[in-house]
Length: 503
Image 1 (cartoon, rainbow, N blue to C red):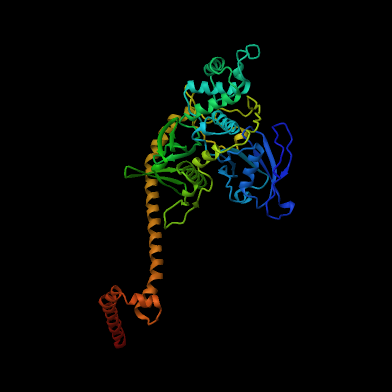
Image 2: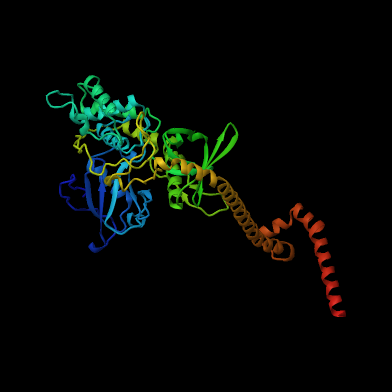
């Protein structure tokens, strides 16, 4: 039912159809292409009501992947905003573009403990994801760690160093990092020759995972934004918690148990923290409301996945306060502890791992833009996405070096106006909150006042009204407060009418 043929760049793709219970005619089917971690593609036809879970299951069936809860499918809308495909909603209702659709199969939740991954296949797919993270500058590491990671990749792809097959500059054929100096390449050669000899591809890949797992930015998908001072900042989520980077430096790590709430309003994202009975709110500003909502939703999912022991403990969260209308979302998948437990129970014979030979160099390789993360002693420059990554990366422009001083001066000049605007934004937010509170109070009053008048003035003999009237508190209110007030109002109205009649 889910069989298909997976091809690489130069191959042809065989069309398959995913059939759902919905009875639709063939002309309502839509073409969907999913790009895999090794850059191969699977194309299929989906129907209007096909849900995201069908597509995720289809890709996992193609791989024969059982530890599938770490993975997801993501796409980019026409506004260049990234999204993770919701498994519980129809695909066509999530896509804001017209078919054919293009998506990417990627690691969504990075395993907190790679040693507990049961199958080599899962480790290989995670290795491919980490390799992409390294190439696109998302993994921060020292020079020595960069050399070790590069040597693991070379060992996994070509095996042991052979002087008869590998010339002195053989590492130049590998584009492993966004910018790799000759010094780094020489160190990679040294590690590859001496430290990794005899390791199979599976062992070399596993060693790369263990090293990557120890780094600060393992699993961080950076979301660009501005902090409350206007400084460019990158936010992300890890198994440990919420992280904040400025340049290549991590300035915050807020652990999941300390985060009370994450919410957003328009383009502003809030993280509410409670540490030692002290409440703190971190505020960040994204480029668009859609980017802010995506940041919030990723946070909700990551907190649910890594924090809770059971999926039954996960609750629906809202993006705002109780009186305000906002987005509601509930993560519905397994949590990390359940995934590890399920992995330990896998009893099948391991599936064969088909390793793909990915070209070492890429024609769209570029070095003129930044994402955040690079390795020292390389210059902290952030590469632009290649054509293959266009569906999953947001480009963040970096200022040219010659303009840095000019930008610093401009930033100082704008500080006063920025602070003024921030003050106005906070005032407007307060007025908006206060007006909504007044409206809620008026609404409650309109509901409760008629009920109170029915209790006080009518003789309707309904059991629950009768019981209320018999309570001592109601009788005291009626005799000591309501009757004198009614008598006073009647006198005032009578006096006003007499004055009007005389005139």
